[in-house]
Image 1 (cartoon, rainbow, N blue to C red):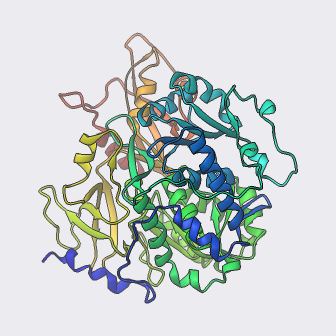
Image 2 (cartoon, rainbow, N blue to C red):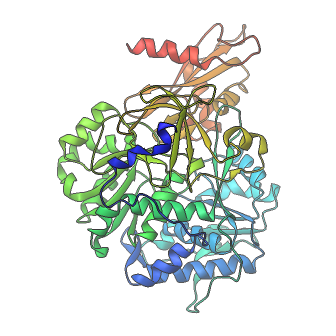
Image 3 (tube, rainbow, N blue to C red):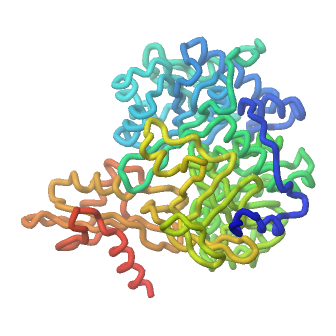
Length: 554
Protein backbone atom coordinates (compact mmCIF):
# COMPACT_ATOMS: atom_id res chain seq x y z
CA UNK A 1 0.00 0.00 0.00
CA UNK A 2 1.25 3.47 -0.90
CA UNK A 3 1.86 5.84 2.00
CA UNK A 4 -0.67 8.23 0.43
CA UNK A 5 -3.44 5.63 0.59
CA UNK A 6 -3.21 5.60 4.38
CA UNK A 7 -4.21 9.30 4.52
CA UNK A 8 -1.98 9.61 7.58
CA UNK A 9 -2.35 13.40 7.43
CA UNK A 10 -5.75 13.09 9.13
CA UNK A 11 -3.88 13.01 12.44
CA UNK A 12 -3.26 16.73 11.86
CA UNK A 13 -6.96 17.64 11.53
CA UNK A 14 -8.66 19.82 14.10
CA UNK A 15 -10.43 17.57 16.61
CA UNK A 16 -13.89 18.76 15.50
CA UNK A 17 -13.28 18.11 11.80
CA UNK A 18 -15.06 15.03 10.44
CA UNK A 19 -12.68 12.56 8.84
CA UNK A 20 -15.21 11.76 6.13
CA UNK A 21 -18.38 13.45 4.96
CA UNK A 22 -21.42 12.33 2.99
CA UNK A 23 -22.17 14.76 0.15
CA UNK A 24 -25.76 14.55 -1.18
CA UNK A 25 -26.35 14.77 -4.92
CA UNK A 26 -29.02 17.44 -4.57
CA UNK A 27 -29.36 20.55 -6.77
CA UNK A 28 -26.85 23.15 -5.59
CA UNK A 29 -29.53 25.80 -5.07
CA UNK A 30 -30.84 23.71 -2.17
CA UNK A 31 -28.02 25.32 -0.19
CA UNK A 32 -29.94 28.61 -0.40
CA UNK A 33 -33.42 27.02 -0.37
CA UNK A 34 -32.77 25.16 2.89
CA UNK A 35 -30.69 27.71 4.76
CA UNK A 36 -33.02 30.59 3.98
CA UNK A 37 -35.55 28.84 6.24
CA UNK A 38 -33.29 28.65 9.28
CA UNK A 39 -32.56 32.38 9.66
CA UNK A 40 -34.93 34.12 7.21
CA UNK A 41 -34.51 37.57 8.79
CA UNK A 42 -30.72 37.44 8.98
CA UNK A 43 -28.92 39.64 6.43
CA UNK A 44 -27.58 37.51 3.56
CA UNK A 45 -25.84 40.45 1.85
CA UNK A 46 -24.56 43.85 2.92
CA UNK A 47 -23.67 46.37 0.22
CA UNK A 48 -22.65 49.84 1.42
CA UNK A 49 -25.24 49.57 4.19
CA UNK A 50 -28.08 48.11 2.11
CA UNK A 51 -29.08 44.67 3.34
CA UNK A 52 -31.01 41.78 1.82
CA UNK A 53 -32.24 39.10 4.21
CA UNK A 54 -32.00 35.39 3.45
CA UNK A 55 -35.76 35.25 2.88
CA UNK A 56 -35.64 38.23 0.52
CA UNK A 57 -32.67 36.75 -1.31
CA UNK A 58 -34.48 33.46 -1.85
CA UNK A 59 -37.58 35.24 -3.16
CA UNK A 60 -35.54 37.37 -5.57
CA UNK A 61 -33.73 34.29 -6.83
CA UNK A 62 -36.93 32.34 -7.42
CA UNK A 63 -38.43 35.33 -9.23
CA UNK A 64 -35.37 35.74 -11.49
CA UNK A 65 -35.17 31.99 -12.15
CA UNK A 66 -38.78 32.07 -13.41
CA UNK A 67 -38.04 35.12 -15.57
CA UNK A 68 -35.14 33.26 -17.16
CA UNK A 69 -37.32 30.26 -17.95
CA UNK A 70 -40.11 32.51 -19.29
CA UNK A 71 -37.57 34.10 -21.61
CA UNK A 72 -36.50 30.80 -23.11
CA UNK A 73 -33.60 29.71 -20.91
CA UNK A 74 -33.71 25.91 -20.77
CA UNK A 75 -31.92 23.30 -18.72
CA UNK A 76 -28.29 23.15 -19.81
CA UNK A 77 -28.30 26.59 -21.47
CA UNK A 78 -25.33 28.78 -20.65
CA UNK A 79 -25.87 32.18 -19.02
CA UNK A 80 -22.97 34.61 -18.69
CA UNK A 81 -22.50 36.63 -15.50
CA UNK A 82 -20.50 39.77 -16.27
CA UNK A 83 -20.43 41.91 -13.12
CA UNK A 84 -18.16 42.93 -10.27
CA UNK A 85 -19.07 41.91 -6.74
CA UNK A 86 -22.60 43.07 -5.93
CA UNK A 87 -25.87 41.62 -4.60
CA UNK A 88 -27.09 41.29 -8.19
CA UNK A 89 -24.31 38.77 -8.84
CA UNK A 90 -25.39 36.64 -5.86
CA UNK A 91 -29.03 36.74 -6.96
CA UNK A 92 -28.12 35.87 -10.54
CA UNK A 93 -25.81 33.03 -9.52
CA UNK A 94 -28.44 31.15 -7.53
CA UNK A 95 -31.20 31.98 -10.03
CA UNK A 96 -29.31 30.54 -13.00
CA UNK A 97 -28.59 27.34 -11.05
CA UNK A 98 -32.24 27.18 -9.94
CA UNK A 99 -33.36 27.37 -13.58
CA UNK A 100 -31.16 24.37 -14.39
CA UNK A 101 -28.90 26.51 -16.59
CA UNK A 102 -25.11 26.81 -16.42
CA UNK A 103 -23.31 29.85 -14.99
CA UNK A 104 -20.50 31.15 -17.22
CA UNK A 105 -18.32 33.45 -15.12
CA UNK A 106 -16.83 36.39 -16.99
CA UNK A 107 -14.40 39.08 -15.88
CA UNK A 108 -16.07 42.53 -16.18
CA UNK A 109 -12.68 44.08 -16.92
CA UNK A 110 -12.29 42.06 -20.11
CA UNK A 111 -12.18 43.78 -23.47
CA UNK A 112 -14.43 42.85 -26.38
CA UNK A 113 -11.66 40.70 -27.87
CA UNK A 114 -11.10 38.85 -24.59
CA UNK A 115 -14.81 38.16 -24.14
CA UNK A 116 -15.32 37.00 -27.72
CA UNK A 117 -13.78 33.57 -27.09
CA UNK A 118 -15.92 33.04 -23.99
CA UNK A 119 -19.12 33.96 -25.86
CA UNK A 120 -18.17 31.73 -28.77
CA UNK A 121 -16.87 28.71 -26.84
CA UNK A 122 -19.64 28.58 -24.23
CA UNK A 123 -22.45 29.40 -26.66
CA UNK A 124 -24.29 31.58 -24.16
CA UNK A 125 -27.97 32.28 -24.79
CA UNK A 126 -28.31 34.60 -21.80
CA UNK A 127 -26.24 37.36 -20.24
CA UNK A 128 -26.67 39.22 -16.95
CA UNK A 129 -24.44 42.26 -16.70
CA UNK A 130 -24.24 45.89 -15.56
CA UNK A 131 -24.32 49.22 -17.31
CA UNK A 132 -20.55 49.86 -17.51
CA UNK A 133 -20.12 46.91 -19.88
CA UNK A 134 -22.79 47.95 -22.38
CA UNK A 135 -20.30 49.44 -24.92
CA UNK A 136 -18.26 46.24 -24.74
CA UNK A 137 -21.10 43.71 -25.02
CA UNK A 138 -23.34 45.40 -27.59
CA UNK A 139 -21.33 44.19 -30.60
CA UNK A 140 -20.87 40.72 -29.06
CA UNK A 141 -24.57 40.23 -28.33
CA UNK A 142 -25.31 41.07 -31.96
CA UNK A 143 -22.48 38.95 -33.32
CA UNK A 144 -23.50 35.87 -31.30
CA UNK A 145 -27.24 36.60 -31.28
CA UNK A 146 -27.70 36.43 -27.50
CA UNK A 147 -31.50 36.51 -27.07
CA UNK A 148 -31.77 37.17 -23.31
CA UNK A 149 -29.83 40.13 -21.88
CA UNK A 150 -30.51 41.54 -18.41
CA UNK A 151 -28.77 44.73 -17.26
CA UNK A 152 -28.43 46.31 -13.83
CA UNK A 153 -26.64 49.25 -12.26
CA UNK A 154 -24.57 48.86 -9.09
CA UNK A 155 -26.23 51.82 -7.39
CA UNK A 156 -29.65 50.18 -7.84
CA UNK A 157 -28.82 48.03 -4.83
CA UNK A 158 -27.15 50.73 -2.76
CA UNK A 159 -29.02 52.73 -0.09
CA UNK A 160 -29.38 55.89 -2.17
CA UNK A 161 -33.12 55.60 -2.77
CA UNK A 162 -33.12 55.97 -6.59
CA UNK A 163 -33.26 53.08 -9.04
CA UNK A 164 -32.17 53.50 -12.65
CA UNK A 165 -34.49 53.13 -15.63
CA UNK A 166 -33.99 51.30 -18.94
CA UNK A 167 -33.89 54.66 -20.70
CA UNK A 168 -31.11 55.96 -18.47
CA UNK A 169 -29.01 52.86 -19.10
CA UNK A 170 -29.57 52.97 -22.85
CA UNK A 171 -30.79 49.40 -23.14
CA UNK A 172 -31.22 47.84 -26.55
CA UNK A 173 -34.77 46.85 -27.63
CA UNK A 174 -35.68 43.56 -25.97
CA UNK A 175 -33.10 43.83 -23.20
CA UNK A 176 -34.47 43.55 -19.65
CA UNK A 177 -33.87 45.81 -16.64
CA UNK A 178 -32.77 43.79 -13.60
CA UNK A 179 -34.64 45.77 -10.94
CA UNK A 180 -37.85 46.07 -12.94
CA UNK A 181 -38.23 42.34 -13.47
CA UNK A 182 -37.79 41.77 -9.70
CA UNK A 183 -40.26 44.50 -8.74
CA UNK A 184 -43.16 42.37 -7.52
CA UNK A 185 -44.67 41.23 -4.25
CA UNK A 186 -45.75 37.89 -5.70
CA UNK A 187 -44.08 34.81 -4.22
CA UNK A 188 -42.58 32.32 -6.65
CA UNK A 189 -41.50 28.71 -6.30
CA UNK A 190 -38.42 27.41 -8.15
CA UNK A 191 -39.15 26.45 -11.77
CA UNK A 192 -40.15 22.82 -12.25
CA UNK A 193 -36.85 21.70 -13.74
CA UNK A 194 -35.41 18.26 -12.98
CA UNK A 195 -31.83 18.85 -11.79
CA UNK A 196 -29.40 16.03 -11.05
CA UNK A 197 -26.22 16.28 -9.01
CA UNK A 198 -24.11 15.34 -12.03
CA UNK A 199 -25.55 18.12 -14.19
CA UNK A 200 -23.13 20.92 -15.17
CA UNK A 201 -23.63 24.01 -13.03
CA UNK A 202 -20.70 26.33 -13.77
CA UNK A 203 -18.19 26.81 -16.57
CA UNK A 204 -15.12 28.42 -15.03
CA UNK A 205 -12.58 29.45 -17.63
CA UNK A 206 -8.97 28.73 -16.86
CA UNK A 207 -5.97 28.07 -19.04
CA UNK A 208 -2.36 27.13 -19.43
CA UNK A 209 0.28 27.20 -22.13
CA UNK A 210 -1.77 25.96 -25.05
CA UNK A 211 -3.46 29.21 -26.00
CA UNK A 212 -7.08 30.03 -25.39
CA UNK A 213 -8.66 29.55 -21.93
CA UNK A 214 -10.41 26.24 -21.22
CA UNK A 215 -13.78 25.99 -19.48
CA UNK A 216 -13.69 23.76 -16.40
CA UNK A 217 -17.14 22.19 -15.90
CA UNK A 218 -18.22 22.17 -12.25
CA UNK A 219 -21.32 20.14 -11.44
CA UNK A 220 -24.20 20.73 -9.06
CA UNK A 221 -22.57 18.08 -6.84
CA UNK A 222 -19.21 19.88 -6.96
CA UNK A 223 -20.78 23.08 -5.60
CA UNK A 224 -22.63 21.26 -2.82
CA UNK A 225 -19.39 19.48 -1.90
CA UNK A 226 -17.47 22.75 -1.75
CA UNK A 227 -19.99 24.40 0.58
CA UNK A 228 -20.15 21.43 2.94
CA UNK A 229 -16.41 20.76 2.96
CA UNK A 230 -15.45 24.37 3.64
CA UNK A 231 -18.01 24.52 6.42
CA UNK A 232 -16.61 21.36 7.97
CA UNK A 233 -13.03 22.65 7.66
CA UNK A 234 -13.94 25.78 9.62
CA UNK A 235 -16.54 24.08 11.84
CA UNK A 236 -14.88 24.96 15.15
CA UNK A 237 -14.71 28.68 14.44
CA UNK A 238 -18.07 28.73 12.63
CA UNK A 239 -20.16 26.96 15.25
CA UNK A 240 -18.55 28.89 18.11
CA UNK A 241 -19.57 32.13 16.37
CA UNK A 242 -23.16 33.21 17.06
CA UNK A 243 -25.16 33.29 13.82
CA UNK A 244 -25.81 37.02 14.14
CA UNK A 245 -22.01 37.58 14.08
CA UNK A 246 -21.25 35.35 11.11
CA UNK A 247 -19.92 37.52 8.29
CA UNK A 248 -17.67 36.81 5.34
CA UNK A 249 -15.67 39.69 3.88
CA UNK A 250 -16.11 39.52 0.09
CA UNK A 251 -13.17 41.25 -1.58
CA UNK A 252 -12.29 38.29 -3.83
CA UNK A 253 -14.10 38.61 -7.19
CA UNK A 254 -17.22 36.47 -7.43
CA UNK A 255 -16.43 35.71 -11.08
CA UNK A 256 -13.30 33.94 -9.82
CA UNK A 257 -13.85 30.37 -8.62
CA UNK A 258 -12.28 31.32 -5.28
CA UNK A 259 -14.89 34.01 -4.58
CA UNK A 260 -17.69 31.84 -5.91
CA UNK A 261 -16.86 28.90 -3.61
CA UNK A 262 -15.51 30.59 -0.50
CA UNK A 263 -17.87 33.58 -0.47
CA UNK A 264 -21.19 32.73 -2.14
CA UNK A 265 -21.40 28.98 -1.47
CA UNK A 266 -19.78 28.89 1.97
CA UNK A 267 -21.55 32.01 3.31
CA UNK A 268 -24.97 30.71 2.27
CA UNK A 269 -24.36 27.30 3.85
CA UNK A 270 -23.12 28.95 7.08
CA UNK A 271 -25.90 31.60 7.16
CA UNK A 272 -23.17 34.23 7.13
CA UNK A 273 -23.69 37.77 5.85
CA UNK A 274 -21.71 38.55 2.72
CA UNK A 275 -20.14 41.98 3.26
CA UNK A 276 -19.60 42.89 -0.38
CA UNK A 277 -17.18 45.34 -1.97
CA UNK A 278 -17.05 45.67 -5.77
CA UNK A 279 -13.36 46.58 -5.82
CA UNK A 280 -10.31 46.46 -3.58
CA UNK A 281 -9.63 50.04 -2.54
CA UNK A 282 -7.39 50.06 0.55
CA UNK A 283 -9.06 52.94 2.39
CA UNK A 284 -12.53 51.60 1.57
CA UNK A 285 -11.45 48.18 2.84
CA UNK A 286 -10.18 49.63 6.13
CA UNK A 287 -13.34 51.69 6.55
CA UNK A 288 -15.52 48.63 5.97
CA UNK A 289 -13.49 46.48 8.37
CA UNK A 290 -13.90 49.15 11.04
CA UNK A 291 -17.68 49.23 10.46
CA UNK A 292 -18.14 45.75 11.95
CA UNK A 293 -17.16 44.23 15.27
CA UNK A 294 -15.99 40.92 13.83
CA UNK A 295 -15.79 38.79 10.70
CA UNK A 296 -15.91 35.01 10.74
CA UNK A 297 -14.08 34.54 7.43
CA UNK A 298 -12.03 36.50 4.92
CA UNK A 299 -10.93 34.65 1.75
CA UNK A 300 -8.04 36.67 0.35
CA UNK A 301 -4.90 36.61 -1.75
CA UNK A 302 -1.42 37.68 -0.58
CA UNK A 303 -1.57 40.95 -2.53
CA UNK A 304 -4.65 42.06 -0.57
CA UNK A 305 -3.18 41.05 2.78
CA UNK A 306 0.11 42.77 2.02
CA UNK A 307 -1.67 45.97 0.96
CA UNK A 308 -3.27 46.17 4.42
CA UNK A 309 -0.46 44.95 6.64
CA UNK A 310 2.11 47.33 5.18
CA UNK A 311 -0.29 50.29 5.23
CA UNK A 312 -0.05 53.11 7.81
CA UNK A 313 -3.60 52.26 8.98
CA UNK A 314 -2.70 48.68 9.94
CA UNK A 315 -2.61 49.52 13.67
CA UNK A 316 -6.25 50.66 13.60
CA UNK A 317 -7.39 47.04 13.65
CA UNK A 318 -7.23 44.41 16.39
CA UNK A 319 -6.54 41.71 13.80
CA UNK A 320 -6.75 38.72 16.12
CA UNK A 321 -10.17 39.71 17.38
CA UNK A 322 -11.50 41.07 14.10
CA UNK A 323 -11.07 37.97 11.90
CA UNK A 324 -11.67 34.45 13.21
CA UNK A 325 -10.35 32.85 10.03
CA UNK A 326 -8.56 34.34 7.02
CA UNK A 327 -7.61 32.13 4.12
CA UNK A 328 -4.94 32.96 1.58
CA UNK A 329 -4.76 31.32 -1.82
CA UNK A 330 -4.23 31.75 -5.57
CA UNK A 331 -0.53 32.54 -4.97
CA UNK A 332 2.07 31.79 -2.29
CA UNK A 333 2.57 34.23 0.57
CA UNK A 334 6.16 35.31 1.16
CA UNK A 335 7.97 34.48 4.41
CA UNK A 336 8.14 38.20 5.16
CA UNK A 337 4.36 38.57 4.82
CA UNK A 338 3.69 35.52 7.00
CA UNK A 339 5.97 36.95 9.67
CA UNK A 340 4.23 40.31 9.43
CA UNK A 341 0.82 38.66 9.91
CA UNK A 342 2.07 36.77 12.95
CA UNK A 343 3.38 40.00 14.46
CA UNK A 344 -0.21 41.25 14.48
CA UNK A 345 -1.57 37.87 15.69
CA UNK A 346 -3.66 37.56 12.52
CA UNK A 347 -5.54 34.25 12.10
CA UNK A 348 -4.06 33.54 8.70
CA UNK A 349 -4.01 30.16 6.90
CA UNK A 350 -2.74 29.23 3.44
CA UNK A 351 -4.41 26.82 1.05
CA UNK A 352 -4.42 25.48 -2.47
CA UNK A 353 -7.13 25.00 -5.06
CA UNK A 354 -7.77 25.35 -8.77
CA UNK A 355 -10.63 26.20 -11.06
CA UNK A 356 -10.70 22.47 -11.78
CA UNK A 357 -11.28 21.74 -8.07
CA UNK A 358 -13.71 24.60 -7.36
CA UNK A 359 -10.90 26.37 -5.45
CA UNK A 360 -10.60 23.68 -2.79
CA UNK A 361 -8.38 20.70 -2.07
CA UNK A 362 -5.61 21.49 0.40
CA UNK A 363 -5.48 23.89 3.34
CA UNK A 364 -3.78 24.60 6.64
CA UNK A 365 -5.66 23.18 9.64
CA UNK A 366 -6.49 25.73 12.31
CA UNK A 367 -4.61 23.75 14.95
CA UNK A 368 -1.13 23.73 13.40
CA UNK A 369 0.70 26.06 10.99
CA UNK A 370 3.83 25.28 9.02
CA UNK A 371 5.20 28.37 7.26
CA UNK A 372 5.46 28.10 3.47
CA UNK A 373 3.24 24.99 3.41
CA UNK A 374 -0.16 24.98 1.67
CA UNK A 375 -1.39 22.57 4.36
CA UNK A 376 -2.91 19.10 4.20
CA UNK A 377 -5.71 17.54 2.11
CA UNK A 378 -9.33 18.33 3.01
CA UNK A 379 -11.70 15.56 4.14
CA UNK A 380 -12.78 13.35 1.22
CA UNK A 381 -9.68 14.37 -0.74
CA UNK A 382 -7.22 11.76 -2.01
CA UNK A 383 -3.70 12.92 -2.88
CA UNK A 384 -0.80 11.34 -4.71
CA UNK A 385 2.59 12.79 -5.58
CA UNK A 386 3.91 11.06 -8.69
CA UNK A 387 7.07 11.04 -10.79
CA UNK A 388 7.35 11.23 -14.58
CA UNK A 389 6.49 7.53 -14.81
CA UNK A 390 3.33 8.09 -12.73
CA UNK A 391 4.74 6.19 -9.75
CA UNK A 392 4.22 7.51 -6.22
CA UNK A 393 7.30 9.27 -4.85
CA UNK A 394 8.49 8.75 -1.24
CA UNK A 395 7.75 11.36 1.43
CA UNK A 396 10.09 14.31 1.11
CA UNK A 397 10.63 13.75 -2.62
CA UNK A 398 9.12 16.12 -5.20
CA UNK A 399 6.35 14.89 -7.47
CA UNK A 400 3.34 16.18 -9.39
CA UNK A 401 0.21 16.58 -7.26
CA UNK A 402 -2.60 14.29 -8.37
CA UNK A 403 -5.89 14.93 -6.64
CA UNK A 404 -9.26 13.16 -6.44
CA UNK A 405 -12.24 14.59 -4.55
CA UNK A 406 -15.97 15.43 -4.77
CA UNK A 407 -15.02 18.92 -5.96
CA UNK A 408 -12.98 17.83 -9.00
CA UNK A 409 -14.47 19.04 -12.27
CA UNK A 410 -16.37 16.90 -14.75
CA UNK A 411 -14.03 17.91 -17.56
CA UNK A 412 -13.37 20.81 -19.93
CA UNK A 413 -16.21 22.28 -21.96
CA UNK A 414 -16.07 21.19 -25.61
CA UNK A 415 -12.49 20.00 -25.16
CA UNK A 416 -12.20 16.20 -24.83
CA UNK A 417 -8.47 16.26 -25.64
CA UNK A 418 -7.68 18.62 -22.74
CA UNK A 419 -9.97 16.58 -20.49
CA UNK A 420 -8.13 13.36 -21.36
CA UNK A 421 -4.79 15.05 -20.70
CA UNK A 422 -5.85 16.29 -17.26
CA UNK A 423 -8.16 13.58 -15.90
CA UNK A 424 -7.31 9.88 -15.65
CA UNK A 425 -9.95 7.25 -16.34
CA UNK A 426 -10.33 6.60 -12.61
CA UNK A 427 -10.84 10.28 -11.74
CA UNK A 428 -7.41 11.62 -10.76
CA UNK A 429 -6.77 15.27 -11.69
CA UNK A 430 -3.21 15.98 -12.80
CA UNK A 431 -2.63 19.45 -11.34
CA UNK A 432 0.68 20.26 -13.00
CA UNK A 433 2.08 21.48 -9.67
CA UNK A 434 5.23 19.94 -8.23
CA UNK A 435 5.41 19.52 -4.44
CA UNK A 436 6.71 17.32 -1.64
CA UNK A 437 4.93 16.04 1.48
CA UNK A 438 6.51 15.84 4.94
CA UNK A 439 6.01 13.29 7.70
CA UNK A 440 2.87 15.10 8.99
CA UNK A 441 1.21 15.21 5.58
CA UNK A 442 1.92 18.91 5.00
CA UNK A 443 2.49 19.78 1.36
CA UNK A 444 5.08 22.26 0.08
CA UNK A 445 4.88 23.57 -3.51
CA UNK A 446 8.28 23.71 -5.19
CA UNK A 447 7.50 24.39 -8.85
CA UNK A 448 4.82 24.47 -11.56
CA UNK A 449 4.83 22.44 -14.70
CA UNK A 450 2.43 24.93 -16.23
CA UNK A 451 3.47 28.38 -17.33
CA UNK A 452 0.57 30.26 -15.76
CA UNK A 453 1.60 33.57 -14.21
CA UNK A 454 -0.24 34.33 -10.96
CA UNK A 455 -0.14 38.06 -10.33
CA UNK A 456 -2.12 39.51 -7.45
CA UNK A 457 -4.20 36.34 -7.34
CA UNK A 458 -5.19 36.53 -11.03
CA UNK A 459 -4.12 34.02 -13.68
CA UNK A 460 -2.32 35.38 -16.72
CA UNK A 461 -1.61 33.04 -19.60
CA UNK A 462 1.70 33.98 -21.24
CA UNK A 463 0.66 33.02 -24.74
CA UNK A 464 -2.31 35.40 -24.52
CA UNK A 465 0.12 38.30 -23.93
CA UNK A 466 2.43 36.97 -26.64
CA UNK A 467 -0.40 36.93 -29.18
CA UNK A 468 -1.19 40.58 -28.49
CA UNK A 469 2.39 41.80 -28.76
CA UNK A 470 3.11 39.81 -31.92
CA UNK A 471 0.38 41.82 -33.66
CA UNK A 472 2.42 45.00 -33.23
CA UNK A 473 3.91 45.86 -36.63
CA UNK A 474 7.43 46.25 -35.21
CA UNK A 475 7.55 42.98 -33.27
CA UNK A 476 9.11 39.85 -34.78
CA UNK A 477 8.98 37.50 -31.78
CA UNK A 478 7.94 37.58 -28.12
CA UNK A 479 8.04 35.34 -25.06
CA UNK A 480 6.27 36.29 -21.83
CA UNK A 481 7.05 34.93 -18.36
CA UNK A 482 6.30 35.66 -14.73
CA UNK A 483 9.06 37.06 -12.56
CA UNK A 484 9.13 37.28 -8.74
CA UNK A 485 7.42 40.37 -7.36
CA UNK A 486 7.30 41.11 -3.64
CA UNK A 487 3.88 42.77 -3.82
CA UNK A 488 2.05 40.79 -6.53
CA UNK A 489 3.72 37.41 -6.08
CA UNK A 490 4.64 37.50 -9.76
CA UNK A 491 4.80 40.27 -12.33
CA UNK A 492 4.35 39.94 -16.08
CA UNK A 493 7.50 40.46 -18.14
CA UNK A 494 7.77 40.16 -21.91
CA UNK A 495 10.94 39.59 -23.90
CA UNK A 496 10.64 41.09 -27.38
CA UNK A 497 12.63 40.66 -30.56
CA UNK A 498 11.98 43.49 -33.03
CA UNK A 499 12.07 43.28 -36.79
CA UNK A 500 15.63 43.94 -37.93
CA UNK A 501 14.83 47.36 -39.41
CA UNK A 502 12.57 48.57 -36.56
CA UNK A 503 12.97 50.50 -33.33
CA UNK A 504 10.46 50.72 -30.47
CA UNK A 505 10.35 51.74 -26.83
CA UNK A 506 9.12 49.84 -23.82
CA UNK A 507 6.48 52.52 -23.22
CA UNK A 508 5.19 52.19 -26.79
CA UNK A 509 4.63 48.43 -26.51
CA UNK A 510 3.11 48.61 -23.04
CA UNK A 511 0.66 51.24 -24.31
CA UNK A 512 -0.23 48.89 -27.17
CA UNK A 513 -0.94 46.09 -24.70
CA UNK A 514 -3.20 48.36 -22.65
CA UNK A 515 -5.46 48.74 -25.68
CA UNK A 516 -6.04 44.99 -25.94
CA UNK A 517 -5.58 43.49 -22.47
CA UNK A 518 -7.08 43.74 -19.01
CA UNK A 519 -4.73 45.88 -16.82
CA UNK A 520 -3.36 42.99 -14.72
CA UNK A 521 -2.27 41.17 -17.91
CA UNK A 522 -0.28 44.12 -19.27
CA UNK A 523 3.50 43.54 -18.92
CA UNK A 524 5.11 45.53 -16.13
CA UNK A 525 8.41 45.44 -18.01
CA UNK A 526 9.61 44.64 -21.52
CA UNK A 527 13.16 43.62 -22.34
CA UNK A 528 14.42 43.76 -25.90
CA UNK A 529 16.56 40.90 -27.21
CA UNK A 530 18.23 40.29 -30.56
CA UNK A 531 17.14 36.64 -30.34
CA UNK A 532 14.80 34.64 -28.12
CA UNK A 533 15.40 31.08 -26.85
CA UNK A 534 13.34 28.48 -28.69
CA UNK A 535 13.65 24.75 -29.43
CA UNK A 536 14.31 23.41 -32.90
CA UNK A 537 10.56 22.96 -33.28
CA UNK A 538 9.92 26.57 -32.30
CA UNK A 539 8.64 25.97 -28.76
CA UNK A 540 9.30 28.91 -26.44
CA UNK A 541 11.91 28.11 -23.79
CA UNK A 542 10.29 30.14 -21.03
CA UNK A 543 12.21 28.12 -18.46
CA UNK A 544 15.51 29.53 -19.75
CA UNK A 545 14.31 33.10 -19.34
CA UNK A 546 12.89 32.38 -15.87
CA UNK A 547 16.21 30.91 -14.77
CA UNK A 548 18.01 34.01 -16.01
CA UNK A 549 15.64 36.22 -14.01
CA UNK A 550 16.05 34.10 -10.88
CA UNK A 551 19.84 34.45 -11.08
CA UNK A 552 19.48 38.24 -11.20
CA UNK A 553 17.67 38.13 -7.87
CA UNK A 554 20.41 36.19 -6.10
